[in-house]
Amino acid sequence: MIEVNGVMHMESSQGHLVPVDRVDPVDKLRDETVREIVCRAKELSGSLRDERAKMLDSVATMVAIAGEEYGAKIGGEKGNVTLHSFDGKMKVQRAMQDRITFDERLQAARSLINECLRDWSEGANANLRAIVDAAWETDKDGNVSTSRILGLRAIKGMDDERWDQAMKALTDSMQVVYSKSFIRVYEKDQHGEFQPIPLDIAKV
Image (cartoon, rainbow, N blue to C red):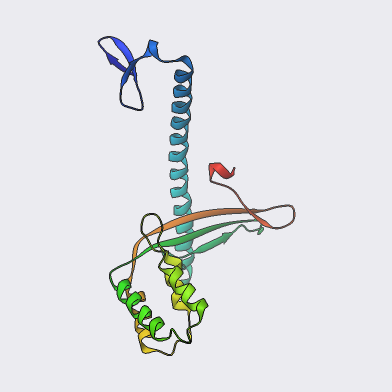
C-alpha cells in the first residue's frame, strides 16, 4: 500500500498507482493471499537456511573430532561424509558438488577433436560422431553440458596424439567456480530401506 495525498493506493503490475477503493475485492483478496504466502515462505526459507548451516557445522565437528582421535583429516572440509546412528536406522550425508565451467582452452579441444573426426570420417563410428556432436549442444543460455563434455574423457582407444592433446586441453580448461554443500537425511522404513526425509517443501 502506498499513501498519496492521504489516499491509500495499490501499485499495479504496470507500475500504476490505483486507489484502493477502485481495486476489485477479488484482486485485493488475491494480493493479500499471495503476500501472506510469500512472507511465510521467506520465513521458512530463512529457518531452513539456518538449520542447514547448523547441520553442516554438526557434521564438520564430528569429522574434526574423529580426525583428532586418529591424527588425520577425515573427508576434509570439502569431503563427502556419511554418519550413521548407533542403531543403524538413521544416517546423515554431507555431499559436496563443484560448479565447473570451461575457459578458452575448451575451444582448442574442440578444434582438435573435429580434426580427428574429419580425418577419421571414412571409418569413423557413427555413434562416436553422435556422442561428440551432442557434447557441444548448448542450453537456452548458451552453456554446454558439463557432464557431456567430461564424458568425452571416458572415450578410450583413440590411437591419435591429437585426441590425447584434445583431452589434455579439455581437462586444463576446467575451472571450479564454487563448491556447494548438501545435507541429506535418511531414516529406515518398516522394510529396512533408507528413505530420505524431505527438506524440499514440494516433496513433503
